[in-house]
Amino acid sequence: MQWESWSAFWDMGGAGFFVWGSYGVTFAVIGLELVLVLQRRKETVKRLLRWRRAVGKDGSGRAGARMES
Image 1 (cartoon, rainbow, N blue to C red):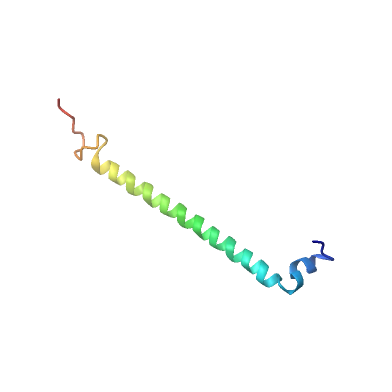
Image 2: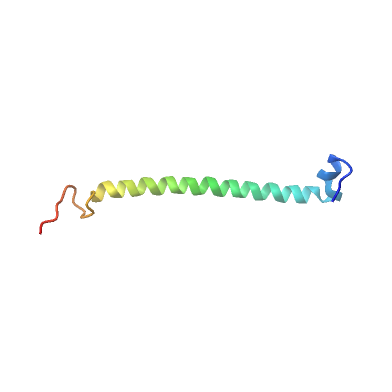
């Protein structure tokens, strides 16, 4: 499709507000989703590190415990 000018392109025959508005809302929601995912990941990593320190490196629940055979 060819447009006579940039203003005609942005206007899109009167539907420009809806077209560009929908693009704007979509990109805003995708951006918000990325921020929330990164925030949730950061919290999960912190929680897992706290859990790992509480359990200990061997996973027995006792810090520094050794398995006896």
